[in-house]
Length: 217
Image (cartoon, rainbow, N blue to C red):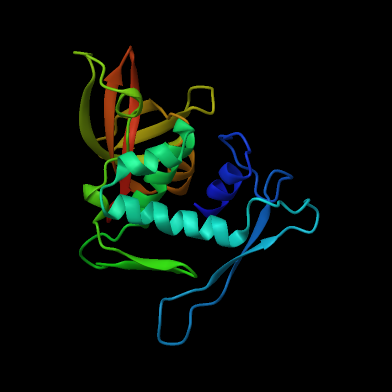
């Protein structure tokens, strides 16, 4: 989330496969070890020595943007968040990553984020956060064939060619190739070879991945 935000603020175009440490990454992320008796960690964004220093974007700016964005998701102010993130792909990516960061509401009930300018207690359970679909971003579209359903299975590389596809093997042994729109790439890769619950929808002759949440095996 920090790296995507730093690239967005630096004016870097959204990329499906974001190579870490690539020339377009303006900062290096430094994460401290958890403090004794706590799950808390400290995150610092250090300017890369091989990159020209931006006069407009600092590590503090990036962290503040992430904290403010998570606060918007917590407070269900997605319209305000959308107005701040002009690129649809970055917007979908941020909300999908916020969904993964959110507590499950059972084992974990709160994730706290603190920056130099403020803090947010993220208590909204991940199951209540809807990742926006394309039509929700650009406006309602009447489509009687746009039906969604929830399925459990394991995600893996799709048999179909193309980086926009991911494979799903359901618990009863069926296999599907799902379309993944730009913005959800990071989430999908983080869930490869894991048991997940996905929401999919049929649209224009293909099956599109709408959301994904890890579940207990």
